[in-house]
Figure 1 (tube, one colour):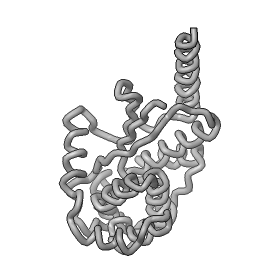
Figure 2 (tube, one colour; figure 1 turned 45 degrees about the vertical axis):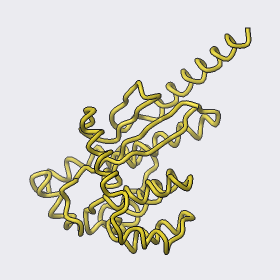
Figure 3 (cartoon, helix red, strand yellow; figure 1 turned 60 degrees about the vertical axis):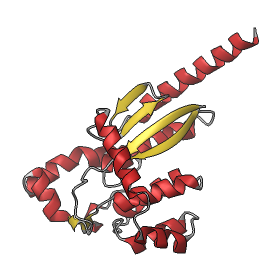
Figure 4 (cartoon, one colour; figure 1 turned 90 degrees about the vertical axis):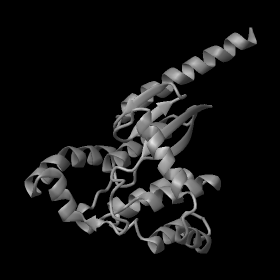
Amino acid sequence: MIRLDILSDIACPWCYVGKAYLDRALEAHADHPFTIEWHPFQLNPEMPKEGMDRRAYMEAKFGGKEGAVRAYMPLIQHAEKAGVELNLEKIAKTPNTLDAHRLIHWAGLEGRQTPMVAALFRALWRDGRDVGDADVLADIAGEVGLDRAMMRRLLDGDGDVEDIRARDAHARERGVTGVPCFVIANQHVLQGAQPTETWGKIIEELTDRIAEMQRDAER
């Protein structure tokens, strides 16, 4: 297997689209060689814990409503192509995602990391749920098969907060400035939401290379 590390943030809609593109390629190549691990990167590390009004955040970031609309048009087009349902009008608040990253980490310890990532993306971008709220996060944890009560208790504490922040800082030190960021075999880096076709070519090349290595080993 080949490790595919993905740096991502639930608050990043391009990360959601990038995951969807990758998922389509993986579904089309059932024999793909990837083992996937998700890593934390906060787009808004200074976001207040309670989050921020979505409209105010968007207009401040993009210089007003018209700027926000222009910025989101390419995203909407790619989301449609990727088969991602975005319901932007449902999102009342841009969340602080530190606790969401903790939840993803804990889900990984139980072998449920990717389902947790998928559930969090859907919760925010499709359903408009507040993924910065501890009760909402605990509910989502229960929905993907984790112990809801235990996750809720953990969220009340500060366990793994510094670890998440340190991993985020480490990514920035290595030159990551935006997400999604894909690292293949700790060697090759792909930035941004890569089309399904690109992932298909990568998977086929890696599969052929692995098969060739196996043939050489058998000789």
